[in-house]
Length: 280
View 1 (spheres, rainbow, N blue to C red):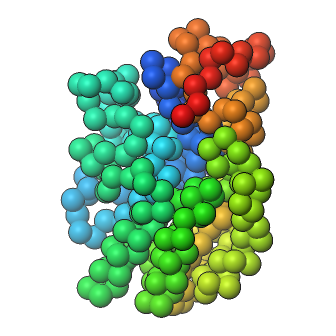
View 2 (tube, helix red, strand yellow; view 1 turned 90 degrees about the vertical axis):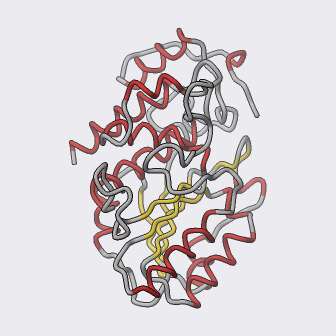
């Protein structure tokens, strides 16, 4: 799995570089990086040559503010020119805080939390009705599960026996600038999904071995929605901002970005000051 670790490291570098000149949702993007890298490199039938193929697999990033992780992955698997990442938030390109379908490989706009689980189940249902074998994945934030539409989607998916659909929960324990369990507690999350009829696996979302073991078992149970609860760490890879409520949306200076890149590589750095933080 060393090749995946190398790709994930490069994706995290891209995320950090996008956290300046307007900033990005750096903490949540870092928590989702390993999930997205694994799915695109080892599981999904998606590549630069089949983006319009009706037999391709589908990925919907419902927690759209993690799009730096998605674009960073695209850059590493040749779906997006790496140089374009420098256009983040530029009026001359379509790369900004949420997925944009003008970028090849993006299936649907997202940003309104709780929206894409229903879109994903609609696509999965269409595939089932046509007798297709495509797999559909929707990545959902744990705080996003406060939206009732997510649970409605689980009920409808199981009602239609959509075992070609996988909901992946990025369980980084934070919603915006609060811990999920301090705002609206979600646990016991595994039991809740099971009670709604889903087949559930809970894993370490930063372990490529655990990811491979889980997704190799797809479908988890015939006729049931697949749910992967991936336990992750907000800000993974940067000890100075890991698991911090105040490191949600950050707009760092160029010097701070260089410091964070060194920290990601294992070099000792000084703590970033609170003045650099922009909370939205």
